[in-house]
Amino acid sequence: MSGFDNQPFFSKKSKNNSMEKLWPAVQAAEVLDIILDSNHPRYTDVNDIGKIKYRAINSDYGKPLDSDDDGGGAWAKPLELAFKQLPLIHETVILIKSMNSKTGETPGGTSYSYLPMSAAPHANLNYNPVPGAGSQKGSNAKVNQGKDFTGNKSKSDTERQDLKWGEYFKEKPSIERLRPFEGDSIIESRWGTSIRMGSTINDSDIKNGGTKTTWSARGDNGDPILIIRNGISEESESTEAYIENVDNEKTSIWLTSTQLVNITLASKRFGTYGISPQRTNGWPSDYVPTLTPEYEGRQVIINSGRIILNAGDDSIFMSSKNSIGIMSEGSIHIDSKKPVVIEGESVRIGMGARQPALLGQSTVDFLRELLIYLQALDIATTVGPGLCGPGGNANFSTLLNKLEDLKCTVAKVE
Image (tube, rainbow, N blue to C red; front, side, top):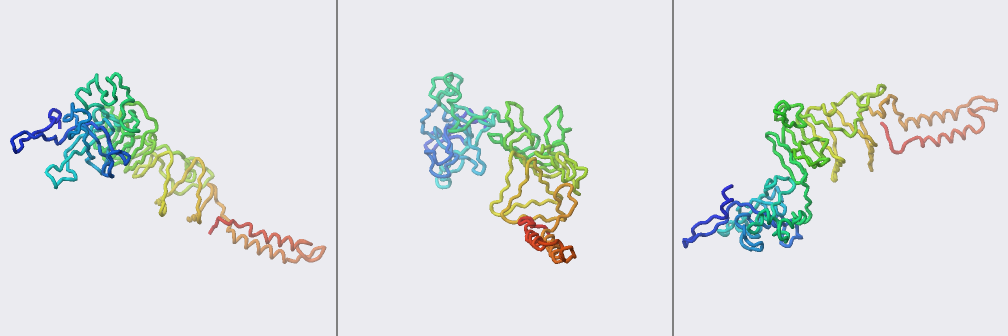
């Protein structure tokens, strides 16, 4: 592709033996405008979204900004629709001759599509503008750079804020690139979001003081790992490439195979398992889990400031072979419009729970029978037969009426 830098266009002989200009199949261009929604004056339908107005850096070089020639303020669509990486104004793209809606109907059924050049020229993830690269001759020289787009007479009059990369884009030059390792496939955005399809790389295999991963303490080289990351907790001005750390990301999802991930848990209350904190007089679970970071095996870790699981149409099912643990440094709430059912070999409330719970209806029935029996019992007294003397029957009747109040109207036990 280096050859087109010095060749603004190609030529061929026409039927009348004259030279006919052909636009190059591939060339670089500067973005002058982009259609993102229906508010753009050039928008006609959804197929226009992503279109850019461009000036080819070579074949349009030196033309006035208002030129209507092919390439002088022409429009191009994204080459790829399934995966969009939309450029900013004044960034550069690669133009590629490709098919258009007239392909197969007319001999000239081709037009330019584009691919972004996110690595050129500054290799900055957040933005890579080259204002004036496709403008009038000399506009990109140090003495003139930027004046054509701001109306300023010279570059010295041009402030950084004069050059706009879009309507609302705000530059964040501190976005750090990911540190790649051998064999990685990485997708990164302008804003510090990324997907790494990587693997275990044993620390002993990284020589000469090279940077090590945060997930390869165990496992074999090549064991797969997938890390989805959205930003880091504290942005820095570091020039070093970034390596994911589950505690440093604003939000991340880690899909592991054999790796150890040293996540700091918000709550370490594993007391019901007989650990952390231990209770010597408590009843530990038969199952004791392997806590992070010692767990070695496939797992999914979701880490963020808040996590919401929502099933708008049906249900949420949590299924586990060994145990499901719910821990909190605050409270735990379970609310339901309909019944809440807990079934198990045994249900224990409290670490020291050893005494069985009373069955409410059975207890009330027993007490009712006992009171009726006592009410009818005749015992000789100084004032005549009876149990409690005068007024005894009335007292028993009052107690019998209160028995139903002992039963809870919500909680039921088997």
